[in-house]
Length: 135
Image (cartoon, rainbow, N blue to C red; front, side, top):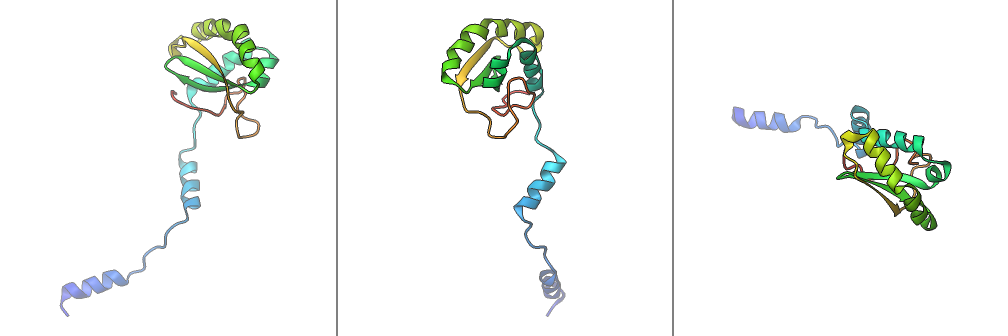
């Protein structure tokens, strides 16, 4: 055997680490870079909490902000139209006035599911679940 063959054998006999469980990898990565709530979400939720009433906060969730359109999910089909008529113009005006840097031009009310995580997602809360397009 020559030197090259002996090096190959020595290299291949070294202990190689076993595969790491995916759960351990994910835990480590989440600690390193936790999931973040977009900055716009807490700002919009704060304004909504200030200007809306209890019925609004109980039945709506901040879903997304995309291309200047805030989408709010509503959990009751009967309230979608009522909330739209009662709050649409007022919210567009207030959000556009208080948050001009977000460029909000419309607010849409959609029938949508409640957040899956308990205790999260009301429009009056800063950590709603949904599509986080901007932030």
